[in-house]
Image (cartoon, rainbow over all chains, first blue to last red; front, side, top):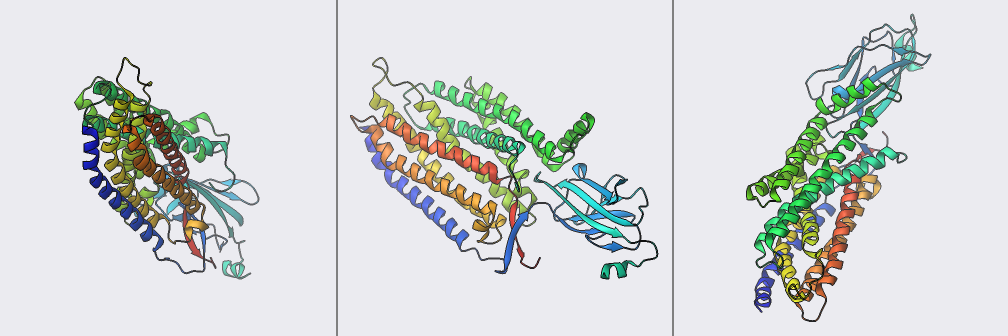
Length: 158
Length: 321
């Protein structure tokens, strides 16, 4: 008896709570649906985790002489302790790199100094890293060190 | 997640699922204990139910430990080179755990889980202080995924997104976790016998608990919707990302399941609860069935969330790039 009485007394409060919950849910849904597209319509969708934004030497670039270091700029701050960079020649053989360094600035690149002075040829930079979210990303790109006597600019124009 | 699904991916997904379920149920155990104290005349003695809640919370916190070990292991496997030496493996584990942001959050998560196991174990004896500590630790556990997930790596409005993420997990616990623990504590009992009280009394007892739980569930659902929208707003830069990206499509699956849970919850509330106190009906059995469906859907949502949190976020780019 007391249960049914308390049930009747509680019902309007429950109904109000339900209405508030449903209204909040619908408002949230409507807000999500009404979110304006930030990008232009002509877009493609790709993955967004830590990614390489640019590098020195740049991907597919031809440089006149061997760089002193490879520098990688990432979209997010990479975790240096578990970042790996490797440099290898297309002809075979890895180029020795010194331990990686990175300045404290948010946009500072990861720097991999070269221990050796590589000869002319095509080189591949391979990297693997993770950001604060722990998602592991990898990538690679190539660049060319021009043969001595040839001009990097001319090579780039070919 | 791009490309084929490896065995390591499946193991990592299971570990994340267990982690999310463990956090949700730990929170649910604390929330259930609070509701048990508010629901008035219990069918069973309150200390028995409170002890069962603490035991469930303890096992849920305990499950977080192997899940954490597996998560660290799969993280290191992703970072390892094929055929690397044992010392390289050790170095990588130490580097990941001790020298990265993800690792720092992982250590805090494990430490809180251990403390929560102890607090729940002490709470089994009925200590109110242990329950308070367990509640704080369960809330701390709920905060850890936000600090080592997508929310932690956003560049704009990070504080807002992380706060929304923490609230999202907290409310998942107070809704689905509480329901799961309440069901385990109250519905698992064997059918009443003549030596015990009448079935109607059992039904009225459960109806009282449901009445106490309903406002909590509704408030949690509303906050879940709002915080989920904040996360979606941040993670999806266009509406079309919802159907053009794997992340968006997985989110749609999760939203569909959430919709089904809302329907199941509404059915329980509108149809199941009145039957609990109706004479001549086996309301408890019917309520148990519908609550089981709701909990199963909740577990499915956690499974989909465990996929979602590891997926790359969609990012729109001009067609000419």
